[in-house]
Amino acid sequence: RGRGIALRLGVALAVLWLVAAVWTIGGGLTRLIVWMNREQPEWMFHPLVPVLALSFGLSVWGIRWGAWSPDEVTPWLVLDGLDRYFSNGWFNAYPPFQFYLWAVAICPVVLASRLDALSLGSEAAVLAMYLLIRGVTVLMGVGVIFATYLSGAEAFDRRSGIVASLIVAVTLPFVLLL
Image (cartoon, rainbow, N blue to C red):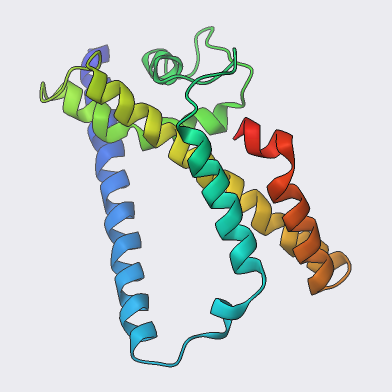
């Protein structure tokens, strides 16, 4: 009975993930077509764009470093949380909501495993789960840079927001711990 519930939950999460991905891609293509038919929008020349690109680039470059930290989240920690439904004695130093996001991100790999299309122990599955988990972390890091800009711009002015976001983007602990 428990496996049936887990399978239905996995299928539901995979469908939700795919719908969100299609919706995002569809909206992105629509915006690209509109952008190609108009003059370049003002945000393209916003000084925050290079700062966000720098942060994204540094974070993506850091993915190739692999698990260097002793508390690095591995796919097995996320799968353990899924197996325990993130309850019943499950605990980790990282917040549960982050694990929920990672669980949604690796949902297609887990679903492929449940459908016997892929073995969770295979090198390809582990690499795919690791990259999906790190991808969520990279996007969250870029979100932190954007939130830093918004906070600085609201508290002071646009220039202060840009400077603050640039400082955070190149701060060594921020780059290393993403």
